[in-house]
Amino acid sequence: MMFDPPGPRGRRRSRIASAVAVVVVLALVLVAVRRFDAAGQLEVAKWRPFLTWPVWRYLLTGLWATVLAAAMIFLLAAVAGLALAFGRMSSFPWPFKAYIEVVRTIPVLLLIYVVLFVLPAYGLDLPLFWKLVLPLAVSHAAQFAEVFRAGVLAVDRGQGEAGASLGLTHAQNMRLVVLPQAVRHVLPSLVSQTVGLLKDTALGYVVSYLELLQSGRVLANFNHLLIQTFLVVGLVYLVVNASLSKLARHLEARGARSAR
Amino acid sequence: MSHLPDLVGGFLTTLALVALSAAGAFALGVVVVVLRVGPLRVLRAVGTGYVETFQNIPLLVWLVLFVFGLPEVGVRFPLFTTAVVVISLYEAAYVAEALRSGVNTVAQGQGEAARALGLTFGQTLRHVVVPQAARRVVQPLGNIGIALTMNTSLAAVAGVVELTASANRVNLVEALPIPIFVGAGLCYALLAAGIGGLAGVLERRLAT
View 1 (cartoon, rainbow over the protein chains, first blue to last red):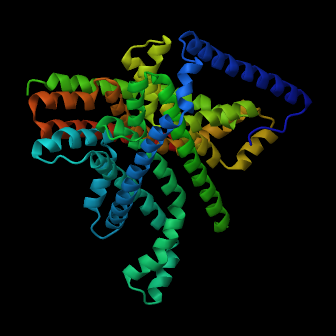
View 2: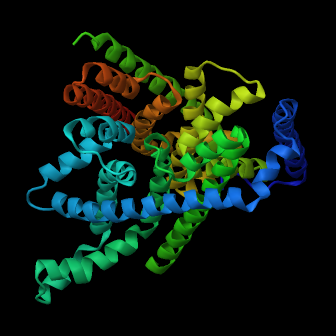
View 3: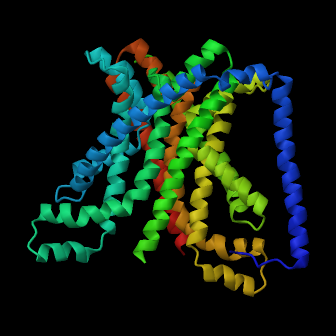
């Protein structure tokens, strides 16, 4: 809060400013809508297909493929990320550190192009699903590693020391004492990481794996309703990811409360 | 390798994309964050809506919508301009969030003290909050800059011949995948290192 509760004059002023803001926003929306209307993009006939079940069945099949790919990427990247995080915290950290730092500075699309156009030249032609999953897992593993490392470092030192003084081996100590607490710390980051991962699966558009966006493209080629189709696809992404983001904020708030 | 100029051209396009989108994203991000922490509820809602919309829909969807959708309603821009606009709009949401968490790290008492001295919202921001928040947002902004650099490669999908696209094209002709793709990767790493270094310098400069 960087402002006083407004007095009568301030309230009047803020009412006026709010009204002006609403008018400006509405005017912008109106201009956009008129533009769309003038181009005939608002005709009911162009939107009606999106009230029918076959179209939604097709898009939801695409969404399911998105979820499958995201789940596989999550699994691979989480396992590899955990290994990388422990590698980086070991007494021999540099290869793990190098992997994390290098991968962070290479665009995923470049990795995808390597899988699409370079590996086949060497006789390795992966199925479509893996052409999408593998590069994304390689890239997200580095990000998961940093999330896990932050989580382990956030666990109070005394916890590990207490475990050691109870006679737990290093592995037992990690597994029974440190990791469970670390995972609780990083749960919100893991969920927001998942949002990023889900968004990256849209690269299925490039490898022509039929996830949500690629399904939208196929649909748009079929029904010639490009704007409508991609707006609906965007809306589906928005609903799914906004729910996940909300979950992340909820977990964060709960974590902050229980830490007190 | 006779196609080296193509790769250099791609690199320069990427450089231009990064510079222009970073400038656009920063300017727009500042506007959005002022809306989000400001006193007007309507504008706060607009700011929140903006951030939620752009953070939760993939950049590729935005690119496809703007590049292929806008011409259908009669709005035509050069491809490069469209790419810069879309990347700026998208990354502005992340810039706004980074700036907001920077503002939130400034102790609440600071804002209250400024108010007690009779400073207005604008004055509080300018003289009290921004100078303290600036140092803390440099690193997060640097990370966004690196992510933005990686994201400019998506413009290749929309048809902009930047570094990734030109690497791919040259490889199709020359069939030297390893030097070409490793080279392209090194260029991106170099750009990212440059941004990281810049953030480091800026952070030390703002420390005093």
